Length: 78
Image (tube, rainbow, N blue to C red; front, side, top):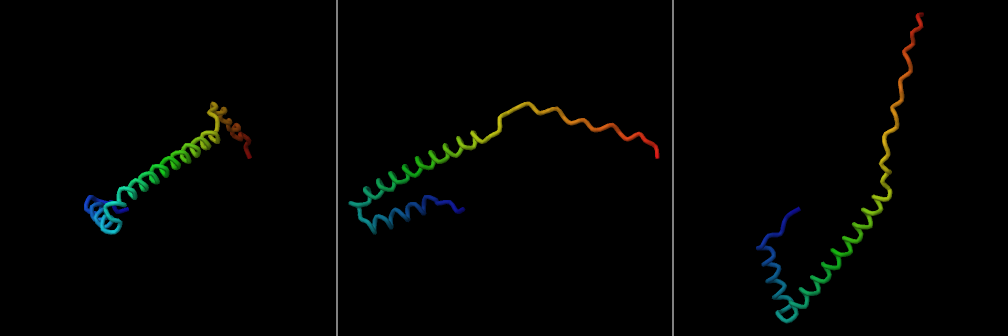
């Protein structure tokens, strides 16, 4: 996955400034920030519920049952 560097962020900022203008840009940035914050909060809630569900389904830790013993070897002669 390619990373976004400072030059790309600057380029997107300049394009947004040209398209939306200096009056609307702070409002748009605030809306995007609130949306991302809500998305992160929802993702954290889903992750917490998922992990809680996995913990409920996990088997209880019990000591291992004794190992089965092998039957004695056949000592009959043929």
